[in-house]
Length: 301
Ligand SMILES: O=c1[nH]c(=O)c2[nH]c(=O)[nH]c2[nH]1
Image 1: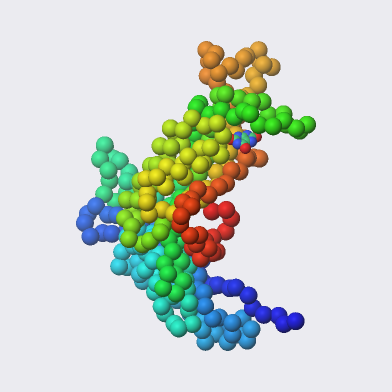
Image 2: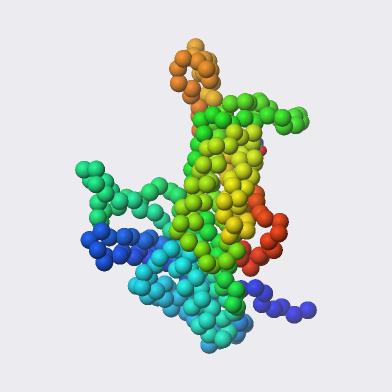
């Protein structure tokens, strides 16, 4: 029996870089959280404390800031530039993974006009990109987290089996709400990153809204199917979607009914936990799987 070093990677996590394009009076702002990780032959550092192969995490951080000086473009483009640079830096670096979160800022409107250089953060939603360079191969995942959506009707849930612990009533009219985390894998790199991102986000929203839902699982599948139907360069979409339960509040103690078709407002309590967690992948069956693209991406997606 020998004890050996298994898979490993190292890098700088969560480099917060904000780049402002001031080339015109109308500034443009990009706000990223960048994490890099190198893969390759780093055995001696682990087993002997020999750092001859260790491109410092400090240098990786500096590289992120230096590259931002040339403009960031889309998160995917920036990730590809960085990952290619790191993977090509030394013979013993065989690959690099660059994961990016992109925070959105909207222009503040003053007197009806969008301001040139004042912005407000737009909610909790975050755009994501993960670029993995593995030798000459480049894999790109794009996605988003915490796209919070709600339908106040157009959602049913019934027809499930009833064991001795099943108490949930069947319903033909409920609130459906979730916070979408999705990642999709592109088949290549010749992509209009920002345009495609916007289009896929719109597709997710339109499909959530337009699908008369019999289960969140069905809505998840419909959202993935719509993305794949409209985007030939996407191979698969992975989702993690909490079912943000809204239960009708019992108001009978106050002599009030709470009927869906009654005269007053319908009152729900929004439960934050526990929540159903619905996760799934929708994919083309004729595109090979790509474990390298997902290596190091934790959780379901
Ligand atoms: O859309 C749903 N899917 C479920 O699997 C489930 N389970 C549950 O209790 N409510 C719901 N709703």
